[in-house]
Image 1: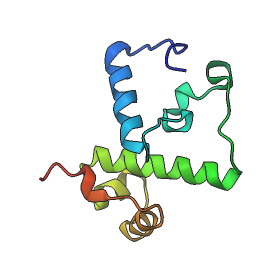
Image 2: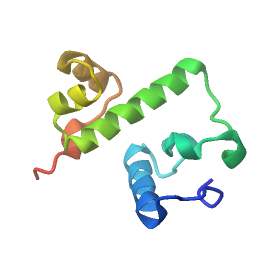
Image 3: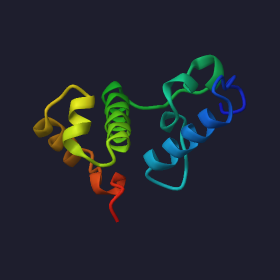
Image 4: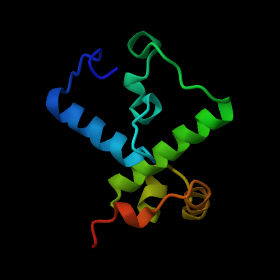
Length: 108
């Protein structure tokens, strides 16, 4: 999939794609569903993520939340605003998907 994509953003886009996939992946393997939707087309990928609609929607929702947390540097309130949601709902989703918001904070 990575080699088939045309990379209009060149190296920076590739770098961002890999960083995102590493952060989103829960194990040692990066699967196609860990990559941005632009790379997940049938023509490029040649393979589909197996799973039910609800599993695929949950994986996509989790990715969106992780991306928002990365952008907000772990600030749940800011991530909720980015996703046009409430802090309460996002907190619930973070617990549901077992996401560690502190992991994306720049404070160490």
